[in-house]
Each structure stands twice: as C-alpha cells, then as structure tokens.
Image (cartoon, rainbow over all chains, first blue to last red; front, side, top):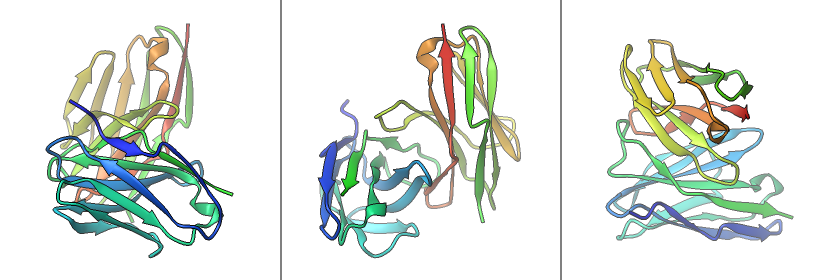
Length: 114
Length: 109
C-alpha cells in the first residue's frame, strides 16, 4: 500500500514569492493535516481538511492556506514568503481524522527561502 | 494551555544498553497519546497510540506505557538501527496533534 506522497521534495524560493505544495494521502484516507517543522519550534499544526472542508486550524497567519479536492488530495499555499517560512512542511493522512486515529506522515517538502 | 515535554533532549546508548524516554503532558482531557519515530530527512513514522492510564503497547524492542501525567518509551537492548528522534504527541478532540520537542537517540555498536 502506497504511503503519503508529497511533491516536490525540495523547493527554493525568494522572499515575496508564493508557493504551492502537494500531498496525496494513503488510498482510502479522507483526512489530511499539514504541519510545519523547524529546529526552533518543532512540529506545529497548520490545518486539517476532511471532505474538502477545513475542519481545524492552527495559529498561523492567513498567508498559509490550503484546500482539498474530491479525491482527498490536498494542496497547501503560502503567499508573500518570508525568511521565517523556511521549514519542512509535512502532510499527514488518516481515515476520517479525529482523536482516535493515528496520522501517517509523508517525507515532507523542504522549503528554503532566500 | 496544553503542554508536551520530552526528556532527555538527547540520549547516547551503547548497543544492548536499555533505557527509557519520558513524555509528560498537561492537557484538559487526554484523547490519545502517540509515539512516532523520525529519521533524518524523513517524516515521522507512527509507532503507538495509547488512550488510558495503565495501557501498554509493544513492538520489537520498544514498549510504551501511559500514566495519568506521563508516558514512557522503553527501549530494550537497543541496536544501532534504533537510532532516531522519538517524538510524542497528544491529540485534542479534533485530532490535532501537539508534539513534544523530541528525544534524539544514538545507539553505538
């Protein structure tokens, strides 16, 4: 069974640009969550999507947005990039989300801002 | 505010030298506690879920336990391939995971 797939694996952008990251969940999984991982802050929750609707949101500015498609694939967009947005962005999927289901992570997209 | 604290930050073990990692949490109503393993350049890999005090789960050389205020991950007779960062996380009622900072484990032959 294929795991969570994230593309691209690496991305280099400059300040002020925008970026879109993609995530394909495990087949049959309908909940997709996004996390940001940095050395200073660790893993922090961005948002969760289920059935094409944002169901939960973390404490990130509005420059961070996402969406989910009918096939459960998800994209995350960051606009007006700042140096502090350099991080590993991780996507995780679970069957239907909620507190009782483990989330399975992809290997992330490493975003570097110059 | 919910908090998850892991200790120690780093642990260096000789092959075969058993040890334990700690994850303490302060949450208003624990829904689930999760342990993950993360290798460099990879995403976290799910290990265990624990839901209630007294619960234990085992997988190969790893055993996770849960009390009302903390969880332990015991590594028995570790091998070099057990070297990784071990992360614990607690879940809120929506399934949002709040992670600790992790314990970096290095096992030397």
